Length: 153
Image (cartoon, rainbow, N blue to C red; front, top):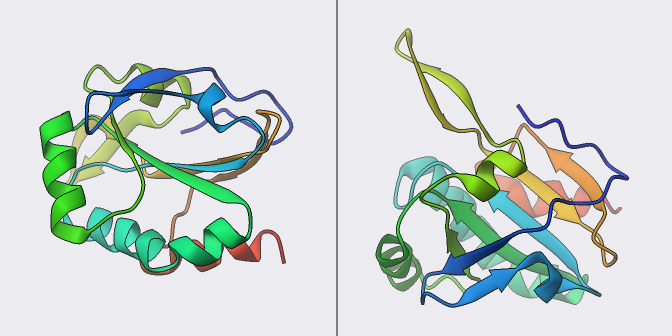
């Protein structure tokens, strides 16, 4: 579970997106960033979340937000996910979990009584100065954009 709290500086990171291009937290300076951590490309919950952010992308941009997703999937998996669902934002391939762990989104999970380590679905909203504004631990995948916008209403 994330130990990040609103008001603290977001952990700096640099990763590679779906096109093997470097992407860093500092690339978003001066803009609010919705950084969503999700378990796996093309799974039902992750697809619902990504598509909800896609469907509300223009509204989120009009409200000053940029979006980037992060999972442990490869860049080629991200490319396929983006192409299949026409996602307008970058997806960072964190195959070694370095960024995921920095943001506290890696931990013990349980499925069918079996415990394992994996990505804990989490969204972190970073402000224009690089400080954490919100940490959303209970993500509503089907209504995630509204969940974020409601924090600013």
